[in-house]
Each structure stands twice: as structure tokens, then as C-alpha cells.
Image (cartoon, rainbow, N blue to C red):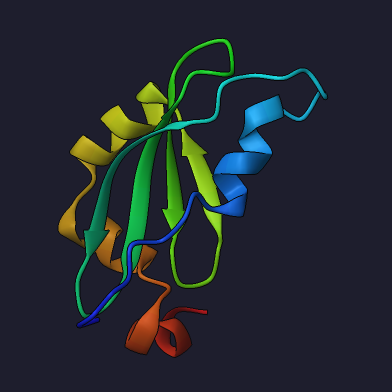
Length: 97
């Protein structure tokens, strides 16, 4: 992804700004962008809910997910086989559908 441009705040982050209930909230706070030849994601801290969550946005297709602390802790316990089965992008997309 050479020459990757600095993306604007994605629609997913903007959608989370009202928490889905129409009440105005601060948008998720961008933390980092991770980019390599296989994928590009933006990580943001979403504090609009009952507890903070990590907002992960795919910069290539706009998909996003909010991940809670318990889900993040569970990632730490995942095996290499677990992580391999999660691959759904790039050349791995066809193999794992």
C-alpha cells in the first residue's frame, strides 16, 4: 500500500458519534492507523457507550467493529490456529468463506 493517503474520519466513526440513539456524543478518538501490504485499519477509542471500546475500521472497505475489553482480553488467549481461522481479507478471503 505504498503511497497510502491519510484518510479522513471514516463514516463508521461518524456513525458512532451519536451512539445510535440520536443523542450527540464526541466521536471516537483516533489512536493509530496500522497499514501493511495486506490490510489497512484505523484504531479509535469509543467512549460513547457504558464502557470504553476499541473501534476498528477497515480503511479499504469501510467495515467496522466495536470490541469490548473482555473481547480484547480473549484475543490474548487465542491460539495461532484460532487467529488463522479469523483471516477473511485479501488472498485469504476465498479460502475461509
